[in-house]
Structures are given as C-alpha cells and as structure tokens.
Figure 1: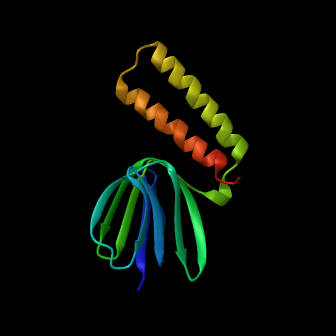
Figure 2: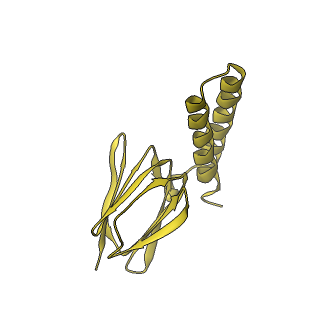
Length: 134
C-alpha cells in the first residue's frame, strides 16, 4: 500500500509522488509516516524530509511549514524545499551569513518578534542546507 506525498511551496507543487515512507522534522521531533497512519496536523521545522519507495530514499531540505495527513495522503506545505542533491554548500553558507547579518540588524533596530522569528528560521534552514551534503 502506498502513500501519496505532495510538497508545496509558495511557488507551487515541488513534488507529487507515491511513496512507501515519509520522515518529516516536526516541532515535536521527527515522525515517520507509513500507509494507514492516523490523521494528523503538525508544524514542520527546518530540516531534512526523507521519502522512500522500492528500497531507494530521496531527501529534501525543507523550511518551516505545515504537515497534514489524511487517509493515505501526506501534504507538506513549506516556505522552501530543495532536493539535497542540488544544494551548493558554499552558497547555503553565504545565505546563512547574510541571514545572520539581517538578524543582527533587526535586533539592533528593535524589530518585532515576528520578523526576528522569521530570520531565525531562515538561519536554521540555511544551516540544514549547509550540512545536508556533509
């Protein structure tokens, strides 16, 4: 029995495929989803989402978002998602440094908590991307 996995970003559907398993980084830890999983809604944390079928496994670096499981469909709606194979670690490191500078500037200018939380999440996502290929 298979699951239908759909990953969507603001730019559109990134992935729609049938899988046997999905492992997702959530606010309460990583969860693994198999066919027949109970309905669930959860917050996705920046990290690596793994999915597999037929003995092979693929991975995406995902940013913050929402997870919804209904019947044998898994929906992940995230700010950003990129295949781990396509990540350039040096580019991700530079993006992390830019986000850290923006965070320092936001704190210095006493930005609201929402902006600071957004920048902190951006840093976590870039750290995930930087370390994904190591």
